[in-house]
Image (cartoon, rainbow, N blue to C red; front, side, top):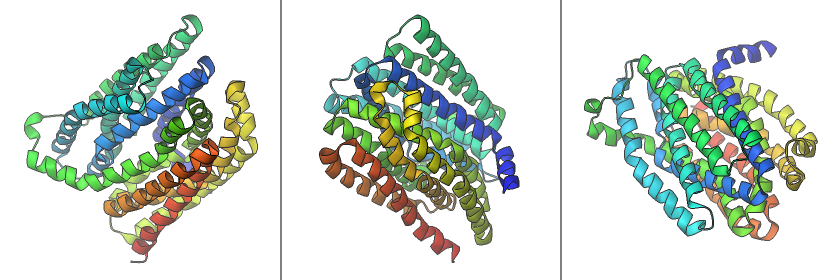
Length: 411
């Protein structure tokens, strides 16, 4: 077992390190905000980040995962694929920004317009960077991803810490520093993609093929949208039903839960390239699935136990006393860790095998279950019910995914 883990870690070291830096960066950023500003401000920030990320996922149409999958195959005209997808992203930008500002006006007119605008631009930069990053993943250029990410995030975090220590900036200033770092990351990723011989060439864009690519990736995009909505819908409902302070409690506990997932989530990045390459070889896919299931359980079960036993201690060490109620949220969410790991693996297998429609239907069912339960119970029982519903939904989705995985493996 030790040899398997060390071998996997060696093969995935840059992906693992990239995941650590990314999760740690945003965990530290939100930690700084939670300890430097009022809980209501922290709650507003979490709410707008959730809304912006939902809109970005809606408009990405599943293209980041599609481009990684396509780049993993040999003989593809990668510049043609890349050019078409980048063009789609540029076309989607006005719709994304207009939707974000409209949603703010309808749902959250009390949140500062400048704050919302900066977050929308920042998330769009991340969205573009993800296209470049997934292109490099398909080419197995994980070191280039790591370099671009580490430089941009480390520089941004140093500047944020210095500002907080010496200038006492507003929240918008901190966000602008992240935006500058996102611009640097995008520039470095573009250079890395170009070095691999992949370039944006407008003349290579075949508009008929472009429409075809959207049609192919749309079911995958919808499954990503549904899963992401399920992941964020509880925050939006809490903000409307119980207020931004409860969002702060829930966001703090949920943030630790998601940060802990870094211990296994890095495996999914290289896993998608591997399973896409294996294609329709059932024996190879079966071996892949059993190997990853064993490894994920070995990591996630002890992690779940640690989070459950030390939940309040972790929250007390990280956050100000105003957010100590987040310990209860984290204790409940700890039970979802193994389910989240296995759910991620099963969904990865379906995507790698091109079973996009099946994946879409299952994630839609998970979203509907999560939304209905949250809509009913948050009003009555508050944010604690959202934590329990997250646990239920993770295992429901895993069971739903497994129906198709087992059917495929049995032939």
